[in-house]
Structure formats: structure tokens, C-alpha cells
Image 1 (cartoon, rainbow, N blue to C red):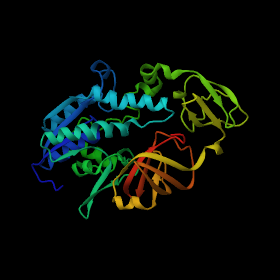
Image 2 (cartoon, one colour):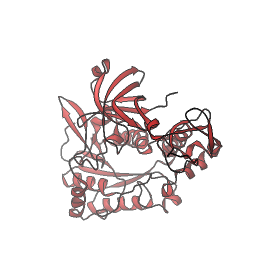
Image 3 (cartoon, rainbow, N blue to C red):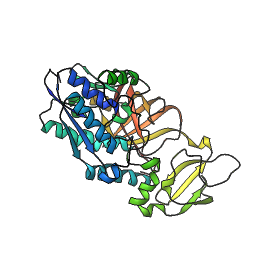
Image 4 (cartoon, rainbow, N blue to C red):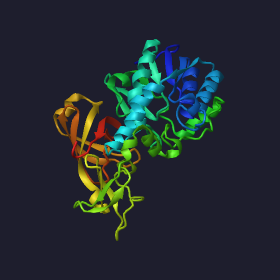
Amino acid sequence: MLLRKKDKIVVAMSGGVDSSTVAAILNDQGYEVIGVTLQLYDVGEMALKKGACCAGQDIYDAKTVADKIGIPHYVLNYESLFSEKVIKDFAESYIQGETPIPCVKCNQKVKFQDLYKMAKDLGAKALATGHYVRKVNVSNENWLLKGIDSNKDQSYFLFTTTKEQLDFLEFPLGGFTKDETRMLAKKYELNTSDKAESQDICFVPNGNYSEIIKKLKPESYAKGDIVNLNGKVLGEHDGIVNFTIGQRKRIGVSNDKPLYVIKIDPKNNRVIVGEKEDLKSIKLKIKELNWLSNNEYLKDDIKCSVRLRSNHEEVDANVKYLGDGFAEVVLESFYYGITPGQACVMYDGDRVLGGGWIIREDY
């Protein structure tokens, strides 16, 4: 979409430096900017939480930025939707022996779904965010690309973005580094210019996700067996939700060589452990494939690179589409610790081709 000055643009303002700077940039460029912040927690709970997306302090910071640059700002209560689509999904994934990525689910089920609809209803021409990714138009098709700053690239977290959503979204920071963003924030004299980034999952206090799961699903802490690859019982665990693939510490079993979590068996409530070499694999399956490239590619095997964790290097791979959103991925080199619940995102250079959710072998 070709944007023109005075066009209405909704900016998703989380209260951090990135989205604050986006609002300031677009306002400075002459667009009619509306800032929107999502309230995702109980007000009393939010007041105690700092430094996380859409927490109490962050809502205040977003409003302060909006007042500074002179744009309207609205806070929308999405607490129920966030609880249902993100927090409960997070707990359920762990019970199923997966390691979820709630930030992707939030983008998929809340920000780029309901916020997208709300922006449309307001008559906006675009919804802008502070993500470090780029959108370019090639032959009348919008492509999603990695951000210029490889240390901040967030393309992995946006693989569920649909083509329709991508056409409506704008990512003004995709061509900037984080340092350049902070310099712009200082130029606009924003109160968020030196604000630290959050490293935790926003709804998990102090990084202790087990407390959230225990509160929502207390039955998930049933004791079970820790076994080796041959099925021999080595010990007992206090709930499979305390384990993730590749984990080495706090397994609770002594051995001559270091033990790692190789598999999690939710059906039999077992944790399977082994040595590091037992973690390596070259094949995986994914579900709910979201494809951002030409569908013609899906008729044949796809040569691409894939990223299986947000902070891991890409691996060359061959992808075969199986239909109904499923695909098989064969890597060209061994990978240690393929983890159900994480994403497999496919790239052609800087371009995001698509991606899906890694599933267990017994899915």
C-alpha cells in the first residue's frame, strides 16, 4: 500500500523505546498517528510489574510519549483474550511436552489479529509496530525480510503473519540498528530513550514460568519416571513441565557422563534422558505451515535455510509440503535438540518464506 501524508496510521505502542520511536517518526513525517496500547493483565498485578511489554509502567510510558508528540492514545483491555489465547496456550503446551513461544502466539492471536481488525475499523491505512523486520514490494507482492540489524532481527517471531496482514503492516525500524533507534528517541526527547529492554516473558514474574503453570494446571505436576533410551527407570520427576529438550541441569539423576533431556513423553508422563549425541537429528515435522511466498513453490521440494530457535544459526534444509498445513523438513547437517513447540522458520536469504510449529514424533 502506498501511504500518503495525513493518512491515518495506528501504532501499537508497548511502552518501550522501539514503538515509541515509531510513533514519533510517523508523526514527524506528517501522518495522522493514533497510539494504541493493550492492557494484558489485571490492573493490580500490572502495577507491580516493570520492564515488560504492556505492563503498568509501560502503559504510563506510552501515554507520556503520546502526550509529548501530541497524538491521541488509547488503552484497550485485552486481558481476557490474552489469557485465553496466550497464557492458557502456554500452560497447555508445556503439559503436552512442548516448549512454547508465547511472543509469537501474542503476535498471531492478539496483536496481528484483533488489533489489526481494530485499526481497520478506525479507518487506518496501516498498523505500524516497532519490530525489527522489513517489508519490501517486489512485482506487486509484499515480502517480509529480516531486519538490517542482525542482533535485533525479529523475523523469527513474525512467521505467522499472513499475506493479508503483511499488506497492512508497516515496520519503520527495519532499516535501523538499535543504537540508531535510541538516537532518534533522544532527538524526539522521548522519556523511553534510555529504557532497558525486557528479557523475560511478559506475564511470567521473575522468569519462573512453573508458577504460572502450577496455578492454571496444578494436575500437571504429577510425578513420573525418568528413563533412559532403553526404558530403564533412572529416577522420578515432579512434573514434565519442569523439563525441556536439551536440558542438562536440574534433571535429578546422577550418571558417569552428563545426561540431557532427549524426549518428553506426555502420554506416559515420562522424561527420556541420554547423552549429548542422542540429541542430534536431521529430520523434523511441522504443523500449521504459514506460507508467505508463491504457493507454486509448495508443489515441489523447497531448498531453503531454516532457523529452529530464535537465537540459533540457520541450517540449510529441504522442505516437503505434506498438505493440510503439515511439512517434513530434512536438514543438511545435524542439529542438536530439535524441540517441539518451537518454530521452524524458512528463509531464502533475508526473505521469510514461511514457517510452522515443530511437533513431536508421535503427533
